[in-house]
Image 1 (tube, rainbow, N blue to C red):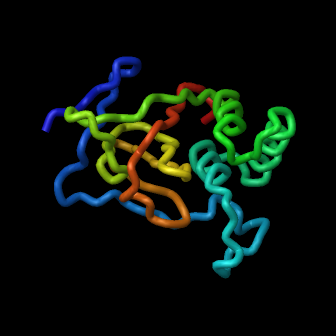
Image 2: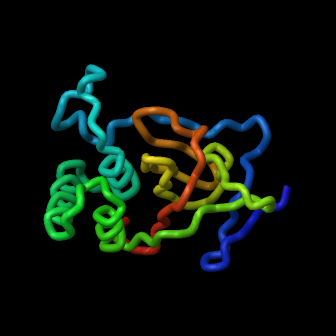
Length: 160
C-alpha cells in the first residue's frame, strides 16, 4: 500500500501493517504522583495535561500550572483548544490538518504509521502517540485507538 506523505516535512503516514496492532501503554502522565488514581471516581478530565506531559517529559504539575495561567489570560478552560494551542506553540509544536486516506476519509488512530511523536486530537479527546521508528505506541489512561484521528500536533521545537 502506498503511503501518503506530508509536504512540509516529507515523513510518511499510512496504514499500519496488517495484523500489527498499535501498542497501548496505560499511563496517568504523572498525575498519580500528586493525586489518587486508584478508583474510577478519581478520574479527571485531564487528557490535555497527560498528552502534553507524555510528549514533552515536563512534570505534570508544571504543565497543569502553565495551562492554568494561560487559561486565566485567555478566559477559556485549560482543556480548551484555544488554551492548550497557545501552550503547545510556546513549546514549539505545530498544528496540522487531519490526515486523510486516498478516498478522502480520515484515519483511525490505530491506522497511523509515522516516525515521529504526535499529539492527536480525536472527538472530545487529546492523546499522545509515540512514533519511534514506525513502532506506534499510544500512551493514555484508556485505549482510544479505534477513534478517528482529527487534527494533530507535531514537534518542530528543540525542548528534548
